[in-house]
Length: 160
Length: 187
Image (cartoon, rainbow over all chains, first blue to last red):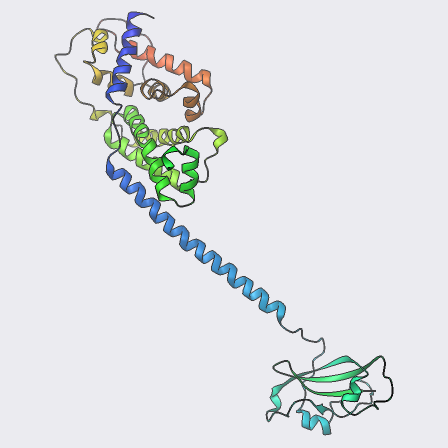
């Protein structure tokens, strides 16, 4: 190494040592720290909103999956008491009993939402006095059930 | 005791919102970033702004650091380099360096060893082309090894070595006594 190169090396080392304690002012640290706090606060709000959206989606999904399914065919019924005397006209020729009320008939006919066709155990006929107790009943029987707006069965009739 | 944590651990903690980790990470690296920016620009105002912008950029892109690409220190220096060069394009800073002493001795080589002409050396460094200046500042003034400097500047190790060597030659040419033929070309 030449003298010139050595002198340059020494000069660079002296400059490095002279500036070794140089630091950024405290105002820069304060600003950088403030920005950190602000961004952390913003991220917390964003996370809270995101979790709220997720929770709302979960509640909606649960509500949708637990709703009672609507039957494929829906008939607008008349009141059960009137149905007992004036049955809903069947789509084809069927022999049915009158509607047997399961709940006290509501005053407002609009309390009834729909009639659904179901298959019930034939033994259910005994509950309504439509079959003797001393005879075995096997299989199922068709029945029309009147549902109220609350989903509860209001009346039933059996189809022969 | 978080002071014993690595830079990567501090960065991870800061990414999770821990202010203490963030503060320690800043204090650990702010000096080097500031000095690098000052030696590159010759301006304390540019150094201050570059330091601020470097850490704000790190904060905004805190998830973009990839350990496999280099150390946190190298990552910060890479950001600082970009910030300084951009600020210098907008506002050249070496006018802040104090005026040279008119009674300065005529033998600048001897004066370098005695430190009389530190400001002359600073000016000469700031006047170097960007690619040579940044390599010289990192390796000779910040004491960073060639490998880390190469990671910070995004170039091969051999390139860093040759740029440092070239920077020194350019400085020698610039600091040659009056009347001596000057080799090389300074941008």
